[in-house]
Length: 153
Image (cartoon, rainbow, N blue to C red; front, side, top):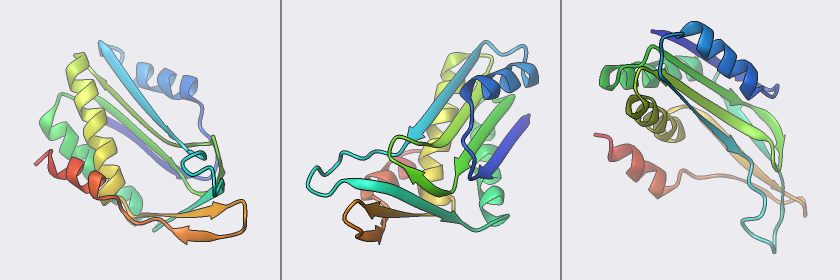
């Protein structure tokens, strides 16, 4: 199994990442990609300016690697890629890419979903919402995200 894990401030290009997946796993019949973006319209009374994401270098990459390994134990997964951005991210910006390749679509779909659910609850990222009016606060983990992760057990 080949993996690609990047934690970076720079944006990523889906076409480039798909090409890397195809080159790394040429016999795969399915490639699934998920891109998470910064939402800004959740509360029209308090518009979001941007998010600020931080992480623990090396620890974060190690935890992501463990999540991918868990997915590979469950599904045939010749290739997996996680790119997660950090720093100041404006509304509409790409935050995360989870890309999985497998011989069969169900394996690629399930592994992708699993990895994303676990990223939300197990990877050490911290997200601060910064609003147009200057207010800001750290985002707490959602109960629904914890429930989704628990549903895989």
